Image (cartoon, rainbow, N blue to C red):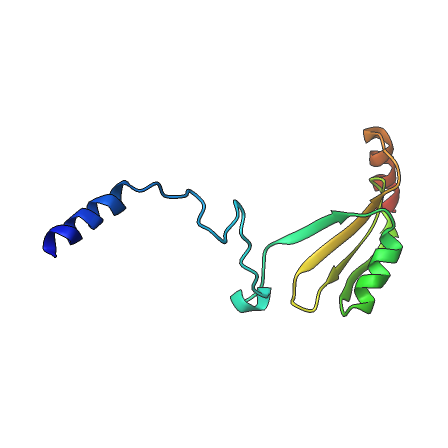
Length: 112
């Protein structure tokens, strides 16, 4: 019996092992609410076709508005919300490309 055990141990050492275990993926999220860790330094930016409709839908699903949807000086229309689990989401729709000169002009106008 001892010889058989030794042979099985040797076979186990030479068996091909998967680099990614069964049931996992190359990226496997561990989903915890940010409050589990005392808050989260991570937020997500999601570009959508219609930020106003998506923002309204998220609020209807229980999200809380952090920053209302508004046109931004850099060419996006965006808003920020927090989902019921404490994750922060920035939803945006790109409305137009803005040159650096125009962006600087718009920023200067905001300061007055």
